[in-house]
Each structure stands twice: as C-alpha cells, then as structure tokens.
Image (cartoon, rainbow, N blue to C red; front, side, top):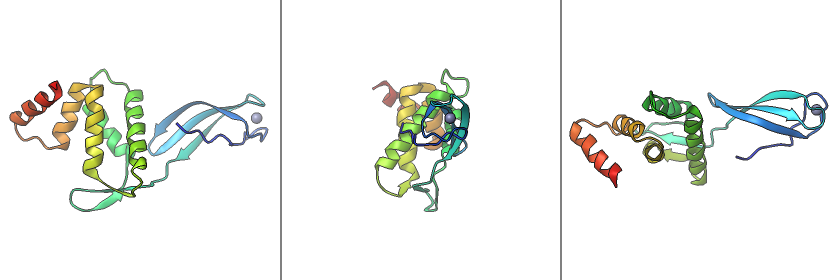
Length: 152
Ligand SMILES: [Zn+2]
C-alpha cells in the first residue's frame, strides 16, 4: 500500500511520521501515526476519492461504494473462519485492480466477478453464498453446477 508520508506532525510540525496501522471505516482510511521526531501519536482520516463509477445492470451509474461490497461479503462470510482483515485486504486488491483498468466506468458485473473470484480462494462456503446471491441462483441445480466448477 502506498503511504503518503510527507505528512506533518501536528505537535512539532516535522514531516517525519510513521504509520502504525491503518483501518478502513466507511469510505475513509483511519491511520494511527507516530512522529519520528517527538514520538507523539496521532490519528488521521483519509477519504478515498471516488475515481470510478459503477454501471449497474439496469444501466444506472453510481459511485463505487466499498462499504456496500464489504457488507455483502461480510454477510456471505457469516460464521465462517474469515477475518475482517482478510476481507479488507481482499477489497484493497479489488480496488487496486479496478484502478489499474484506467477507466472511470466499470460494469457492476466486472466487480462482482472479481469479488467472486477472490472469495473462492478465501472460503468456499462464503464464495457459494455470495455467488448465489449475486448471480441469483434459482435452483439447487445451479448450486451443483457451481460446486462442480469449484472442484476444478
Ligand atoms: Zn512531532
């Protein structure tokens, strides 16, 4: 992850700070930092700029909403041995991949498939849950087909 570290310490104003940890919380990144000069600790919030939009199935365009995807994935991971860290990490990778596409409008299908792909490697059950909701499985046969694909 890129760390923008010319940030000035609010105490001694020296641009020499360390990131202790960072967390995502509803569209913002919260970073705990420590100044390398005076050793004081402080927290910053960085808002992630929406560099791309999502084209929905019905043709509507909306901003990419990480929280929405996070909620969907967390729901699929309920009671599974998957940590919030892992999901957060996965979303970081997905966002990075989307940014790499260098386009501002991305079909929701592309994003959904990225999530499904990554979830497959993380947890089979969570993956099935997410795929079934996302792809709108209507019969057990569709589950069976997906399980077959998973075995490969
Ligand atoms: Zn300082």
